[in-house]
Amino acid sequence: MNITQIQVTYVDTEDRMLMRVSFGLEQSLALVLTRRICRFILENITELEFPVVHNATPEPLASTEEGADPKPLCVRDERPLLIENAECQRTRTEARFIFFARDVGQVNVNLSAGLAKGLESLLFPLVNQAGWFTSLTTQAQRRSEQDSDGMTSTVLH
Image (cartoon, rainbow, N blue to C red):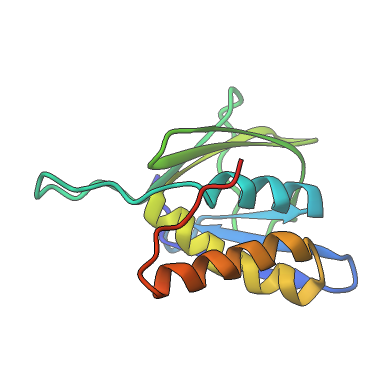
């Protein structure tokens, strides 16, 4: 399934992020992200690079697949899934996140560099608003300023 929209909001009363991933008219997946999971996502998507496109055939921006259990994706009325743990398998141009939720098992979300950078631009202002990871957001802002000045970004390890 291709992702059509991603929304991220900060829930102040719970000190968590709510990420809704939509797949069209009636299907979406709502994930509750803790600080630890948000940091993990940001650390894995900030290093992705946009690929050089050599063909005219566009590739899907993102897709998702359920884990071993073939349950349907969450519909808009269901409760958000609290993500307890995550893994990431990435190349230089894409990231595959495996999110683990208690009652559902695993949910895989594959992001191209373009969609991952979009998610990064949604998450950074919210983690800044929440006061999370001040050193991480400062480094990203510095890297963004370097990019706008025409300087090459450095990759943090």
